Image (tube, rainbow, N blue to C red; front, side, top):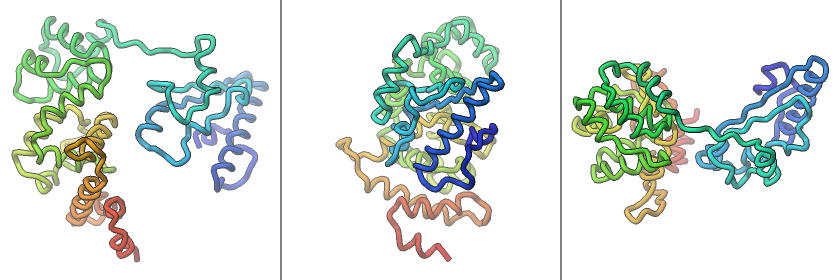
Length: 313
């Protein structure tokens, strides 16, 4: 679709109806991009980012990774740039793995430098009163990891009532992978079942979080605990609309709240949470509220097939 929007429409008419037809269209588009390079000396760069997300988050029956064209079929004038945290991806072909390892084709992105971190702090709202010692600790806590830095700056400027030193000290040290920081947070809150249940519901939403309805989903003390302990993991689009800042935290909570006390995956937990969300979808009185349209999705995931059928006219 992106190639089509940039003028490479292929030779076929109509919308492809199968995976094979889409792959054929891609081949035609790459041929047209080659012609553009040959005739006009314009190189087409195709960026495919987040390859590891495709395997970790979506678990599709037919992975996009397996449909990436082999390097020897990519024509001159076309460059594929692949973004991933790892090459150890089950559906990525060995041919592509070997190709990107050859002749220094892999670029490893380094952490932010101390100068980079200080520049980010300078531009971050609410950080104007940080001392040099505060900034030094922020760099040491985040180790220059961009996502960890964002979480930390949100944490210390989020109006928790802590002073800067206390907030920085309370924030977990980045240890090389962001999931380790999430695990520290989880150990702090896993005994608070009401907070765990609220996070479980939020992680299963497809729409932004309407903060106005959270009071109907849990009690006052749980909402306060959620705001004070987890608000830095969310992007505030407005006073009433929040969403997960990064999908990795949503997936972490989704995984943790899908397991039983022995740490084994328990599909019944996922079903029960979707049942609750399906009930919450009935509550909005505005027919245009996106949550009303999500009821089918949650009923389906709750295995309530008869209820899904009954909703259809």
